[in-house]
Image (cartoon, rainbow, N blue to C red; front, side, top):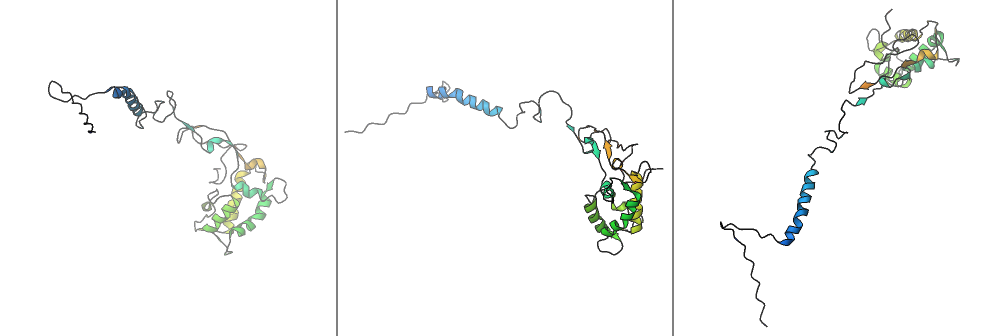
Length: 221
């Protein structure tokens, strides 16, 4: 039985100018719409195209304005300065009132608890440790420099006693020598802060007659 001769390859038709013309078969024509659709979808899904919302950040189209944010001060409400934690611990008779006598009788023991090595002075490291235990943070006010009057990097008993007395006087608004619970809190109104670092200033403190919380420099006379 003689082998089947190979089928001749179809000749490629030529154009009149001699260039080759591609033969487009029926199956290729059927697949062409699918290929074009896929290419179109790929272009629409490009990561470099704009988001569907039309805004660079992907937010809802239209509108505008700046996102609103709130700082800790803008939350408002009733707050207590860190020094209030110290004064309430001096309420020896637990009547929810702290007298100047109770404070002064407790000052020396407080200072000795801060003087960890018992050398008669409180160093910067010792003060930070004491503030962390007593005021809740080494960064809380009053800070060490507010006690160190002569700036010799140490706090004596006299410096400690004098500063505690000043802080008591700042809180004692009616000058009756007693701190009520209402003297130990600050009421701050809520204030909205627009945008990063928004303006409007800091909310003003209000404690009875007004004023800012203690811990900084005493108010002018």
